Length: 189
Image (cartoon, rainbow, N blue to C red; front, side, top):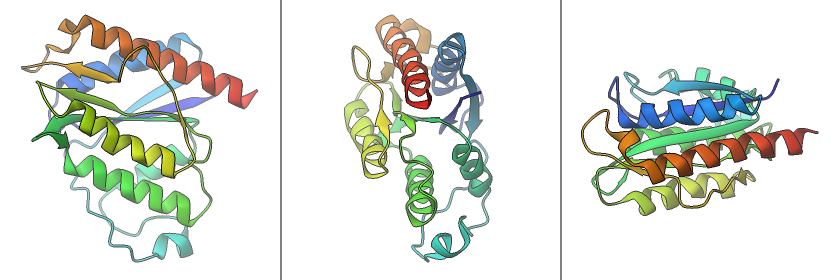
């Protein structure tokens, strides 16, 4: 069965980002594709040091637990990273993770090639489009397929637990998630 890995970059246990990803996973599963949410919460994701060891070994040698996540992504057909916006851009740990995931793929078996997905940004107010642009670059440089929707993959939410109040944002995410699953099924046929 095809599978999508959804990566939650929020450090909070019951974050709006998690709520959005739960909606996303539900829509993916409705389309008959498995979805697994993985959290960066509690991890200290290190920045890539460009050591080149991933090209030699096929995995990242930095000892922070990201390599286990990379292995799950390697086995998947889709990938959706989601980040809260902090100070106008994506949290640093998600960008460090994306850079290392891309470096491992590009330096080795190119497991990201033709993988389907796209980024999601969750914010109280500003920086959403910049965050989406920043995260979207990961997809295009890694020969991935970006799924669309009827708007950008963003949800506006204030305090924890308010993400569902942005009905248009949630509808956009649901359509995006369904599209990810549908594209995976078409590409894998």
